[in-house]
Amino acid sequence: MKKDITSRNDIEQIIKLFYDLSFQDERLGRIFKEISPLHLETHIPLVADFWEGILLDGDKYRGNVTEKHFNVNSLTTLTKSDFDDWYSYWERAVDILFEGKKAEMAKFRARSIADIMSYKMDYINQQTKS
Ligand code: HEM
Image (tube, rainbow, N blue to C red; front, side, top):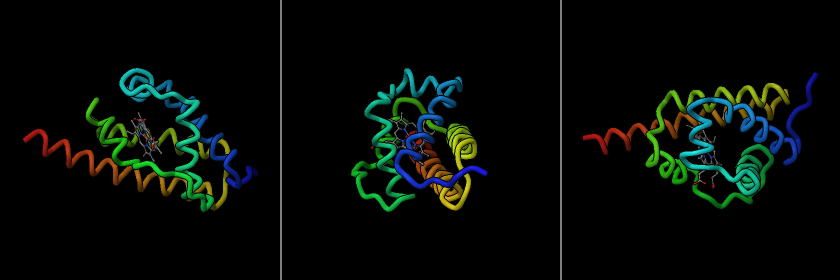
């Protein structure tokens, strides 16, 4: 039986595996490597701050995650299918490494955030089309 998520180090493992997997995806890989290139040394700690706040009661994250993705969306239109693919790599990374209540929460919250972001991006993209 796998263990559950209990530390920031666990969260960082998920994020690293998530990027290992998604960098190999044609579309997401292109976004992460070329369209809005990620600098993983600084990006991973920020994403870990974000998830520590959700899963382990941390309060280090000071960014605006939706705003960041509006910026990405202005470089390339983010669609529901992009968010679904994003989620499928996140789910896979969590499932490969962990199991338990926090692992379920990591997937459930990611799905909800992805759905909300997807809805917001669709809304903005419809407005800018008409
Ligand atoms: C289509 C799906 C997604 C794509 C293509 C994507 C892409 C990106 C990119 C390129 C950045 C770096 C932006 C920058 O530094 O200017 C970023 C940041 C980030 N993303 Fe995503 N993302 C997606 C979905 C999500 C979802 C669903 C979550 C959360 C559940 C998430 C969490 C984050 C966080 C926490 C950051 C760091 C924000 C910060 O720098 O303050 N992303 N994303």
